[in-house]
Structures are given as structure tokens and as C-alpha cells.
Image (cartoon, rainbow, N blue to C red; front, top):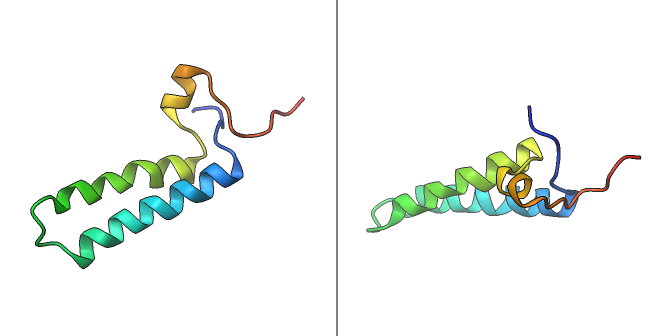
Length: 67
């Protein structure tokens, strides 16, 4: 599908931040802007798939290239 362009550290940070935002939604669902926490799905999915469409557009790679 997409080429892997997310490195290990970047991937772990995305998964942690995404999971934390989703957890924050369930901890505080009554907040006026709590739906914004659901945006944590984006870093979570990009971290799990090791690919970022925005990185592809700008030609950024944080993972090591295989020669």
C-alpha cells in the first residue's frame, strides 16, 4: 500500500500520543471540546502502519533506508 517512512522512535511516539488522546476522551467525555481527543486516531493509525501520508507528500523519511 504505502512505503514505510516512519522510524522506530517516531512510531512509538505516535502510538503513545494517539492512545493518550483517545484515553483522555473516555476519561473526560463531558468536556466541550472532548471530540478533539478523537483526533488521536490519526497518529495511532499512522504509528501502527509505519507510514505517514504527509511524510510521503513532503518526501520525509524518519526510518533507515534499506540499500
